[in-house]
Length: 257
Image 1 (cartoon, helix red, strand yellow):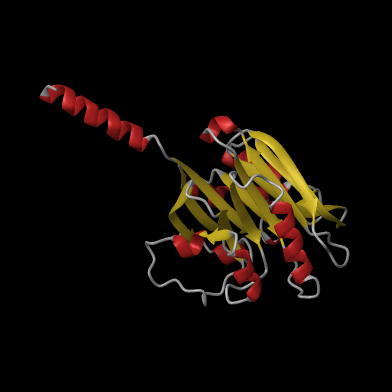
Image 2: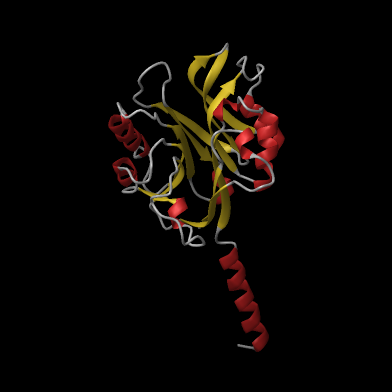
């Protein structure tokens, strides 16, 4: 084989390797009902981080508090994304309150499921199945906001496990949201039997431990079809994040293989 052909073959192999993985930028953010700000400002704040998919918790839709705005729609408009979905957890303040998501990519299907709940707020799980053209395989992204109370926690976690196992084990799945559990709890240990914590898999940060207090997560299914490139809570000094919510947004940037 000539030297030129060897070089060309090497370049072709390198090119195939580079295109083998595609980046997916995931964000989860409890926006505190947007009571400190509005959807437009929230969208402006997270736009520089270029999330492909945003899971939102504590979301208002047409409430007096939100000045009768659809907060999810306003954030999506600021991001320039046309795919979004809201799931009501309860009626509130003349409108609705719940969880939602926003996607850069078209969607194949949307699933919803109600978890065991206590009180007016019905705890929900919503799942977006991304268009297969985006990654060439099935990618499912789940969003939920679990109850902070421990009364139904075990039942809630069991129900979440049953529902997520409804999908094919070969699907690439991500579980995101405000789970209201600490990494030091048995509930977290139970989750990690079937899920990988993106925060703990980021090799760039050596000081991370399970003692780090956090309740916002992005987990991925136990699979070799994805890997973490980077993960972090957004807390840069470009703005005062405490004026937007009582939570920080969490990003996980992964490669889909």
